[in-house]
Length: 380
Ligand SMILES: *Cc1c(COP(=O)(O)O)cnc(C)c1O
Image (cartoon, rainbow, N blue to C red):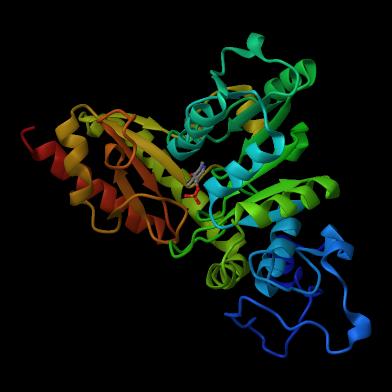
């Protein structure tokens, strides 16, 4: 098999409407002309569902040329049948719609995913179980594991949860947004479905929203695509164009971000003693469990968290940095830091989350060093 960057450039070459344009055009149309010859007409009831996402397009809520290309590239990258959505939460909602569980076992992790579960609990009485409540699982329930988990980049033991899922006859899906290829591969552990917020590392430029579900089963893909017609959550034209552009450079960006973050965390960890106000550093490269090495075979996430001793110190730190913008989100080429209570109401008020970009790592370390020195000099 060709290398990852080669596949990211070429794996959509056989999708429909190959133009002579080197860069695929943006199609702003919502509707596509039917065939000219009446003998080629196919009535809606005779159209195979398998063709919705890859065949001749007819309405962009169903599919359009760039959504098909995005699915071809993401399917190749994520080793399965990919279905793309207009954001990560729409992908999660589509997975819930497909599995339709009575109970979902879930840890902490991304707050928006909990927001959707709360809607399902409100409207349909869905029961939410904590990770330590596996004994309450029943046949047909869903285990949803976010690993590495936001915002601490904690790794959860996938072998353990897959074993539970098989014992209890449940389905298991993984939110792998923080561990995209080639950092980790949840398929190696036998999960049923993988989701990503493609807004993050696949988009990579903080300028688009997208999500993706991946399955190994073509029939599941067909059902997801049929459901998506009525959920109204296909990716839009401009976003599909943008993510296609982003995916071409994905491997270089991601590996650089991962090695930058790991080096910055290592520097912080080795220099902790010099900065007594810095209380905690959280990153999977510092996590000692055996399964970390088994799961993170390609490196560590470009995201880590830290805490100062006081809320005031944490709140002030972002303004001391010059190369890290104070903003939410992660995965883009630009480095960001966020005082986490700004967007997540449940987080500790001393928590800062850092998303490391593609800048030169010496400069990122130097920026942290001067920022930490400033904090140490202040009174609070
Ligand atoms: C951002 C994120 C989501 C939600 O994705 P959106 O594209 O913002 O809808 C879900 N899970 C994780 C782990 C995320 O980081």
